[in-house]
Image (cartoon, rainbow, N blue to C red):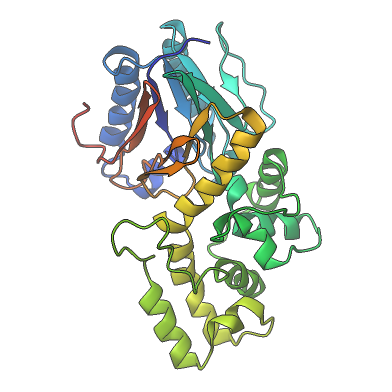
Length: 346
């Protein structure tokens, strides 16, 4: 595998564009093809890493994905024939592709839950990020009828003292199989049941009393904190009630959305990435100095010093709505590019 410049994208959700953005679909679709052309011709990339959720969960209207898959296959084939190594790391929304036998021309498309790629004398790990997601893991556990994990243990990646011994989380295949079985072949509903919201609140509130100052820039705080605390005050509840009570009143379910926005914001996932990178260094060696994920749609870049050098983390952002974000890696240095799909490419 050649070492060179890496381009990474995530959370494209390409098959939702025509339904959700009909007026801009054709132009955005062309822009995405132009992005892939740029990776091949002008971006000087030697690797393209699709860090999950290229597609969404098909198909709400029962329409066929085959034309879209054929077009994507052609575009990725052009990259492969140009000598660019393409890695496809399925995310939780790629469940519709799980189990489909993918055939490509030589050289092959690299498909797996993780890619460890050399760059600048060190290595960068790419993962979708959903296997760090305590809320998603609990959703999958319950769909699999497995015993729930104690919430504080499930969310260990996000805690200030870092990842500790924790029960095994569902692996990538279990997540894809479960999401596919639960959602793909029946009409998708919007939202979660009240029961699912209650245990989602329990998981996502485990770090509600944490300011994440250890990973914050300046006096940055997680978003929606004031909104959530004001809601608690109106309901006469404390943070501990969200973290422990099974009998939350129905009115408390209104906190599910702002808790989710806070949970999937940048600071908690910086903390989780630090813990995850330390774990990956134990698995793959101290030459691993960076982690790139997607999953949260929150474009971010962060670095920190540990006893063995400078560590790096970035989130690829998304191509949802007006976004057209990506990450590049060159010479071992990670750069996050927050952009609109209408912006000119570098």
